[in-house]
Image (cartoon, rainbow, N blue to C red; front, side, top):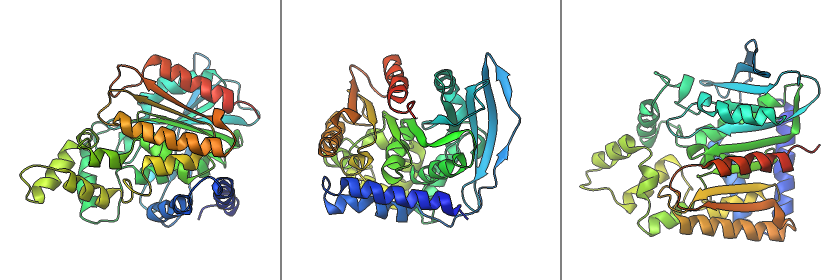
Length: 350
């Protein structure tokens, strides 16, 4: 069972965030957070954390850990900090990997953040890294998507990992070196989607930086620009539309695909509705101007909705949208620099 203090703090945070936004957001949008939490909720189990010995390399300390996220799943993770930073409570930045990735892929970012004084953390998403059969590729992930489409109760496409990262915060709150008031979240692609969904749902994330993940799913469906998003899981999507007896996939089937796997993603949990729920917490959004995974007009709609929410909250400087020029689905070095500086600016102060 999730600790009463931790869960109580989470509920108080949700209530406080709802109060702050009540004047700025329509009631339907304000209720989206509670509806989303109902979709992803499941019985809570003891965290049962396991922590492995640390190693020190080039002045940085690193260790593997794991915890239970539900009755059937354990989440493996890795943290990095400066050697000698064990005393006192530190700000944390969590980094979420993209499709086909694993926590170890994010070690360069973790080390860079650790060098700036953060406790930097990454976990394996559902069916990736240590949570896959092979430790590489997306076969387990796509197989899980096919099973979930047929109604096994899972949400492997984004939502289950959102739950996992919220449980990661529960775990971090038990660590004596963590300042629970200063937990930041960033992620790339799939991890960027999980980042803004988790931050909108859980106000314990104090500062947020989604990379190449923010989008308006409905815009893509309405403007025949949905293909780039489903192309991240080509085997699963093709298997399912062939099962449906279609000659070719179309937007109608893409809606059905989303309805089965990520219900609400193109309506009440879509970017323009959900991104404003992060206000007034500092939010930096990074996308590419030529990214077919996240079509630019939809991104701009998301940005405009967020900008209105931050202006209504009286903190327009807490929101920034970076559109990388002449850039498809990638994060450029300057954007990584901006991420580090965003956390340094908004998360480092007590």
